[in-house]
Amino acid sequence: MKYLSLFLLIFLQTCSSPEREEPNITRLLIESYKVECQGFILQECYLVKEGDAIPEGEWTYFYEDIVSFEYTPGFRYTIEVVKTERNPLPQDVGRYQYSFLSLIAKEAVD
Image 1 (cartoon, rainbow, N blue to C red):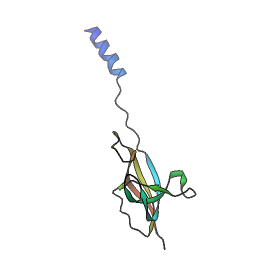
Image 2 (image 1 turned 30 degrees about the horizontal axis):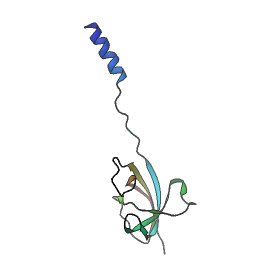
Image 3 (image 1 turned 45 degrees about the horizontal axis):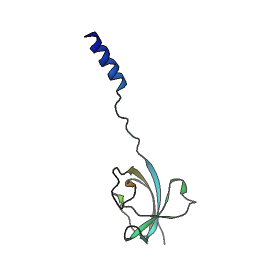
């Protein structure tokens, strides 16, 4: 019985609960209009600057949808999103899924 208790004690100390990953939160600046772009199919894409590219970086095509984000043309948005790696990665989609977290700024653009 002593050995069983010792074994259980050592076993339980070496087992650790899975660590929770911190959410990957990033900021996006979204241009006031969408552009035609070619991904898997011809579609409309956001023009965005992400993270450190705000405000000085180049606008890039953003092919993904942003879950729960309500976009209205004519407004430039600064938002925070949760960026989650897709696993397994479905065919013909981006590596990450983006989910709306919060609105930082919304400005009308003429």
